[in-house]
Image (cartoon, rainbow, N blue to C red; front, top):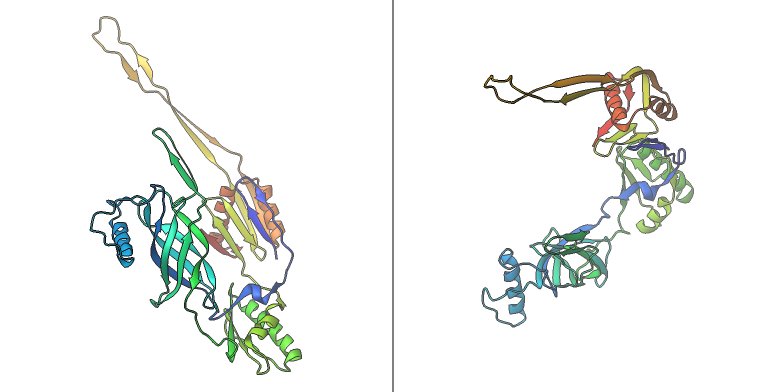
Amino acid sequence: MKRFVLALSALLVWPLAAEASSRIKDITDVQGIRDNQLVGYGLVIGLAGTGDSMRNAPFTEQSARSMLQRLGVGVPSGSVRSRNIAAVVVTARLPPFVSTGERIDVTVSSLGDATSLSGGTLVMTPLSAADGNAYAVAQGAVSITGFAASGQAEAVSQGVPTGGRIANGALIERELTADFNGVPELALKVRNPDFGTAAAIADAINGYAMKAYGGAIAQEVDFRTVSVKRPKKTTASRLMAELGVLNVEADTPARIVIDEKTGTIVIGSDVRVSPVAVAHGNITIRVTESPEVVQPEPLSDGVTALEPSTAISAEEADSKVAMLRGPSLERLVHGLNRMGLKPSGIIAILQAIKTAGALQAELVIQ
């Protein structure tokens, strides 16, 4: 399969391996095997005066007093005024089949008006899932990649100093139990849904199963799902290890993706254009104001005034009329290049060809 990228300055051709096959594990996901999102609220301490101001972030003071009270320190309301504390939101992803005692990475983001989390340490923070149960506890030194420095007349910043990560900063305290090997039937989800790809996956699996297990075990359900029955003499984990390395030809729809902000155009290999005549030209209009100073006649009691003077000129660039026909992607790109167009012009032409019904592809504009 080939992909071609049209960049801002020129039409760039980026060929990939023609009709390259893909492994089943690279184009599908097993239904039910996914990450779970975790979130928690905590405090980062040890900041060098770059934390939250208690006046603008009252929740930071409340959290600090609650933490100290749990540790046996009584703190009256309004007495916490240190800027070495920042309220943060901690997020993480809980991988599938994770066990108690394993560690995962966490992301820490400032919630108040702290200017930097550099040098801070996250205090023990429970991380909960959508069901309300806490599955991990995060704690550790926050690592950030950005910095900020300011003076009276100048400020310098790079990156985002109010967000960071803690590698292996969360400890799993509760695991998601599931008997994956005992599942009688698996569902493979095609990442780029297509009937041809689903059928090719089912054929590849059945071709292998006929030799390994003596019968077909896969059936395409729709353009997104392929159902696989687990043979009794093997586990689901071993079955997916064997099927995941099978190669199939993934099919993709004819599609053109346009990003008007950056001027990037990506054209799929199956895009076709019916014979069509295209004319493209630009008209430039210049309006020049040159006011003139007009002096009154002697002894006329007049005043000096400005008399408007406007010059308007119109220029039309050399427009070209070309026959554009794309029975193959190479010829389509070659025809667009011969017209000497900029990406903005190519985008306008592709939209007009689609409106005329000559573009045999889906046009996606971002």
